Length: 232
Ligand SMILES: [Zn+2]
Image (tube, rainbow, N blue to C red; front, side):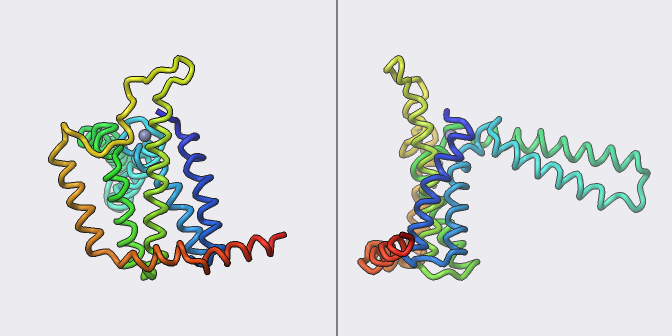
């Protein structure tokens, strides 16, 4: 399994290049391009939230636990003894940090369905919906947001797969084939739900044809070329 730093750089470098090209090609505004870069990096971190000890998991659950403790303090501090408030806050922190983490760990086996190609597609098409419905983006930038998130996710899966090839010994480690996969036979029901969800969400998503046309258009290429000519 590739480590946090590898995943971060592995997602950040191509995302920065792709976001720069998208802005230069006038597909997105600099603001949306910046958000796309962030989504690419997020995509590179996302698969490991199912790993018990991964850095993103620690950050996410640590933040949730602090938030829960703060909420308890805010709710109780007026009419409870200070000692009791501290005790309740510590209890809330531990409950979230240990309890909720244990629950998600039980729910998603690492390298289970989260580390799969359909899951990468799912997060991307979800991002398309959020971008167009919640943020009101036009189809092209909305689809671009989804492509960045899925792209970062795919880079993560590829890096996990690469790190399971032992180049020195020229052999495969046992984890080979557990990161880049189409689904899980052991979790066949979850796999089926995943595919159904992706298909349903793509069906009701804003049309992608305009996005594909714009990305591949000569106008976009000309705008990119003009930007680079201007830089010289
Ligand atoms: Zn991973």
